[in-house]
Length: 162
Image (cartoon, rainbow, N blue to C red; front, top):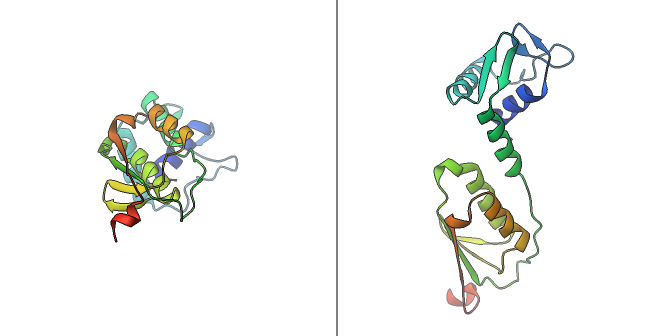
């Protein structure tokens, strides 16, 4: 995933600490492959955003940090592709997902690609319809429904291009 998620996950799941830093059951830091500078700047960012705090027992996740973790875990939910490359591309999807929901926007784009959608412009895609019902229910659940518009085409988009 991301370094932010990994750090928050480690803080929320590990109870062992050495000199205030979380360690695994062998006493080794989990992030040995990260440079000290990367870790330092990421910890600074997490503190500034109030996702983590430190007390006399070590670092812990704040309620905002738990919310961030939940959102990241939810954004990993995947849906099956049911469209072949030959399926008519007769649905235009336009979206304007705010920067505050960047992870959800990337998740949405990833699924459009998975569903064999083509990009027309940055936030305008065309592909087969309808989008899977469970997918659209989840889009509503994570608060993206109001940022997405769909338009059904009378015929396959590829026929318009000719």
